[in-house]
Length: 436
Image (cartoon, rainbow, N blue to C red; front, top):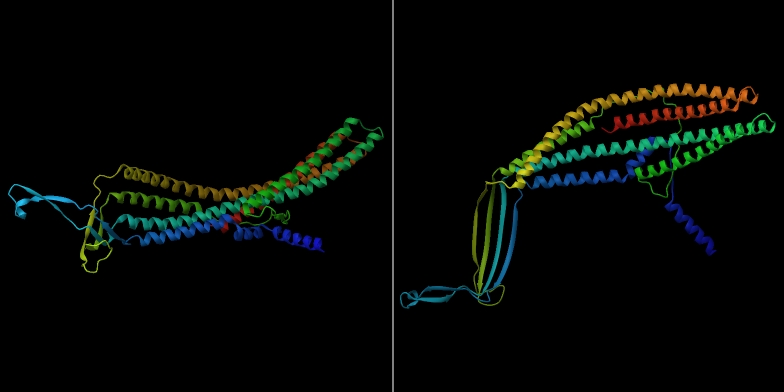
């Protein structure tokens, strides 16, 4: 009974730690990733931080700075000053040493300063706003790239699974051809070299199945990394290799990169202006209030002695006359960054328009290739089937039969690749149209 209970506990734990996830379409994987991706959650953290930074920059425009301090001093040896002796009834021309001050001193001081005119703080608030907008766009670009990488891996898996199925059928065909060749050899109609050629073709078909399985495992592992699956999770892509050739797909312009470059240009311009404001004067309002008590006893507070109060208020003008080398370097770099951002914005506009056209051209190109590859595959398949019958009848040799068999296998792989490429490009267009 103890062993049974232990087994059930282990089984329950293993089921909790292990799960099998099946995705019938790319949209299902898209939705899963949107909920569980660590990269997307990190983007949310970045956005949250940018919002807080903007709020702090706004509050820092006229936010006062204040501090308070309390000092208790024990003058263990009071200072000695020299005064003319005649002030104390002494002889003219002589001096007398006098100890000044009180040994114990309690001092409380509070002061505050308020920015009245500081162009940099206003510009910092604008920079924080632009940084928030840049973060939002940058997160979308990052999300778009993530889904594009996931789509590439996802359709690689579909392609390998379709090729795996074809490879298994081709292995059976190669085995059948090998058995026919052995029978012909045993009847004295073929040479041993022909048997070896058929055997090699059969072995190659077996190894092709093995290699496809390894490649499939690698792609599934890559997909786990991209979507943040657990290492022990079992994944299966259940989407079939459907024919997408006749699907009418519309491509919309995506100006994410253009908007991002424009925002970066605005940020660089504001940063350049902010660096020049370091040469401008700053005006602030300041105030101070202090209390002092000179004690005759070694105590923090003496109730028998009054506190002496003093305070002041005023304006402070800070005018930088000679800027530091660091300020000059920062200004020069900010100007350079702004000039580069202008050129990048010009390039992004051109690139966006061309990428839109490239995406449509890529779709048309792949559809044309898939249609042609399908026709070639059907023709190669028909030729092989006819050559196989002729080979069985002894009309043609093994060389021609193997040649047509390999041509059929290659053409079928090409058709599978081009057909799934349409599915992949279709998903790229969907991502392009959705995340913008």
